[in-house]
Image: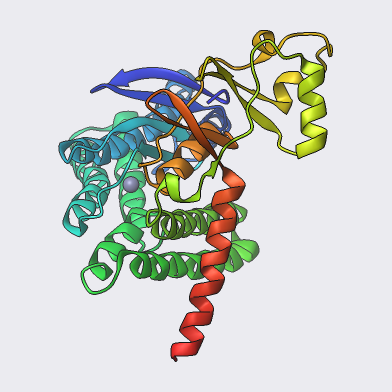
Length: 360
Ligand SMILES: [Zn+2]
């Protein structure tokens, strides 16, 4: 997460701020500065104007943070690991390790965010009525903004919270995968309508539509992968008898191996034990005479043959790596690559479609 900055830790959750947030902070402050009541502070004295404009735009993201914290706290109650909350140009996202497939739990996690936003809106509305001047306008903006956030998130489409609500309702009547597919398609349809509307009236809406479309596609992809890959164990699809290298081999020898076998990465084994991995990236621009032990990566992520293929997929996607050595009792027994998983997915999709055609 190089493009973002860790700014705080709340309830054990790391809070990250993405650089794109600063664009919107500047934009919002400017907007509040030039607008008059009830959506800005143009009618105040110069110093108040600057102070409230900045503070109100900052508070917008604080409210988004509270929304995401509400999701996270309920999720943690169900034992979900929350890796962090990221605030960025379109709002916030809580990065959760695995959202429960129990429809009721998913429902309460999803509704917690909009509920928090509605609560902040309600309190802000009361405070706005109880105060006057800039403070009153500040709370009115908060009331308005948080109501919009709550309602927008209840749109029944991925990746909004409402998409999860829809899925948890559908999942009571059908499989989780079908429920996801329907919610994702609703999401895409809404994104297209939003995009067309945005194209003519509001460029901002067009950007949000794009974000919604990509989010819906992504969610569908992950669930499809999970459905297919969790049926297999790593041991069933790995390449056994994997070609390995030793730490005392030279970079030149590795390059020759790559030309010969066309694999771009090799496990490094010493006395039967896996000690590292060497990939094309490690040996690029390195002299041919250097040893493998000098250039290999030592902290190798591994997987066991008994883990599911989906777990392998998740590790590779999260860490952005192309291959995982398969290890059992400290011994290298095989290797599994991202392209193995993709090929498996393609084959199964074709087989399933043809079986479906035959049976219909
Ligand atoms: Zn939410």
